[in-house]
Length: 195
Image (cartoon, rainbow, N blue to C red; front, side, top):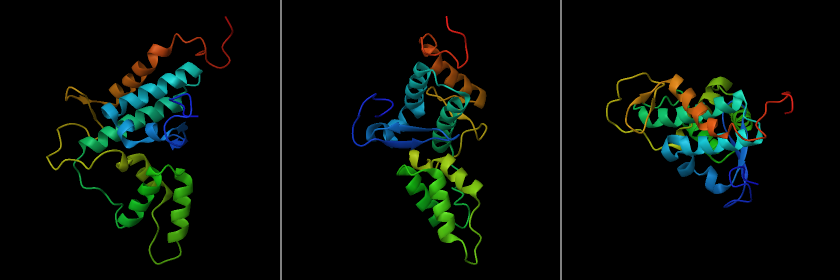
C-alpha cells in the first residue's frame, strides 16, 4: 500500500529511498518528481511527517530525512555552480542517478556500479562520493538557471517570498509541519506511560 494514499494508490507501489536510511512505500503518483518537488518539497514533507506523526513513529532520523529532502531540492533549484561530475566520472554518475531516480536501493546501486568499474587503471569513486550523488538528488529538479547565484550561504533554502532560509529555519519548518499532528492519540513516544 502507498503510505500517503493509505491504499493501492495510482500506478504500482514501490519503495522510495530518502536519506538517513529511511525508505517509504509510495505509489507512482507520489514518487513522481512533480509531486516530490511540489512547493519546494514542502507538500511531500508535510504529508509524510503527518503520516509518521499519526502512526507514532516520527523519529529523529525521519525529521533529518525530511529536512534533507527540503534542502536538496532547494539547493538544486538555487545553485548555479557547474555540476561537479565527480569529477572524471560523468557517465558513471549519470547511470547512478538514473538508477536512483528509478527507485533502486542506493546501497545496491553503489555496490553494483563500483564492482562493475573496479579492476581497471582508474580508481572508482568512493562509496562516500556515490552516497553524495544520491543525497544531491539532481534528478528531482530541473537544471539550475544560468543567472548569477543569489547572495547567501550555499546551504540556504529559498522561501516562497524569495527570502533565504537558513538550516535552522529548515529544521523549524520540519517541526512546524509535524506540530499539527501532536494531538493524535497514537503519537506517544515508545516507553511513555499509558494515560
